[in-house]
Image (cartoon, rainbow, N blue to C red):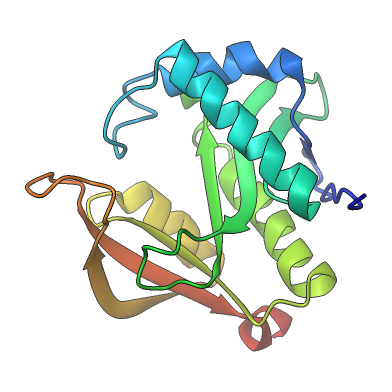
Length: 184
């Protein structure tokens, strides 16, 4: 059995998924503002399928995109963490850092805090050489989080292979954080 990793954060608990996370995850995934830079909002069935994939990745590897709950009151905030990049992407093989927060928790620094805790796992526990992140060129909020994390934007832009030709979200930018930069 793989040992599960649960990162430390001052205000957030990053942990494996529980059935009690399904409903707030589905509500977040059904919010048009939250899903602005994704192809569509998710139905409850699609969200539940995503829940299963997220939980399975953690079960298989010990780490992944963790459920985020505030320490002070246990309220679901969203998710953040690390996962293996799809083989179809030009940066593969790689480990990606990512996040998605419920709209009411934007602007509090939770995404950056959870991502920093995730980077600590990547570089201090998993001994990774680098971590990548990518988003639609129009997603400036996520790009600002990547920059706050000290990630460097690559000159490479690419068409995300899972998005249809002609989609305004198809063109993506790529950021990297290397362990030597993290240690500085």
